[in-house]
Amino acid sequence: MDHDRLNSDIIAALLCQFQVLISDICDKHEIPPTALIDRFEKVNARFDNLMNVNETGLIIPHEARPLTA
Image (tube, rainbow, N blue to C red; front, top):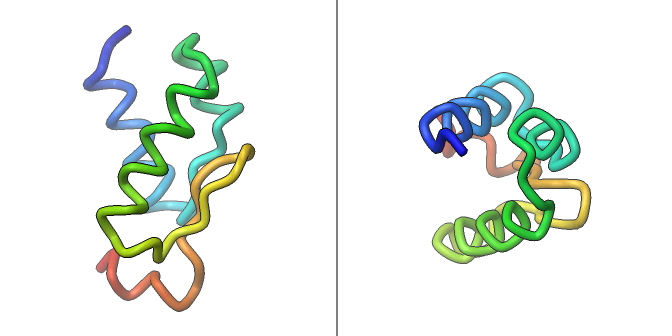
């Protein structure tokens, strides 16, 4: 697995769409969904649970989007 490309795709999705769909990333990088869910939950915990993490992916809610600027 190319971690740089994986990280790049996750960052691009967050910056452009304010969400990362697990199915998109897993299909492209051939990784199991649980790997992303675990990763997203750790990131969310570092940001005081301001994001929504579920089986579909990670979403930055509208009220938390100013933090991405």
